[in-house]
Image (tube, rainbow, N blue to C red; front, side, top):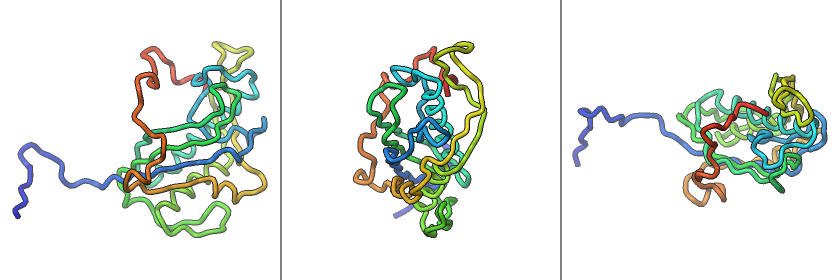
Length: 219
């Protein structure tokens, strides 16, 4: 058997191995009170819902969830870049006042070798010895951290264009049973279809933003 290298057309034959990890977060046990602990975690912003949040307090919960999602992505790519693929969200309805109950997505890492195998869970209870464990630790770090950022918040009562610019603070999603957060996060290396998150599918035309959609508002 002879190996022929496709050099003439400059085909890249040596590159880091992409690895897909599936993440599932059961958010049903997280707080949904109108406090800095509420809002859970979600990529959705106010304009994504069929019915927008009806009060400013509820809109701030949506913004807190989006802030935690943003911080989670920052933590997850600290060692290697990745593509976020096939997001699935579960809500009781498409109303902005409803909390998210489950979040699932895929992480396609550019270089799996850069993901560490060592670390410690946020509560110090367990030591991380696998890449799956490291990813889980970074997710729980975002769920149990406290962050404040300037954000655009949908204001259903007043404001220029119904948008309010203010500092949003997101605190831990639980205040008592910290172990419940660890149990709520599941990370699996997707090696075959059996380990893929159920319900994932390519985006369809109805799910894609329109040409004139403004996706930078109402975070």
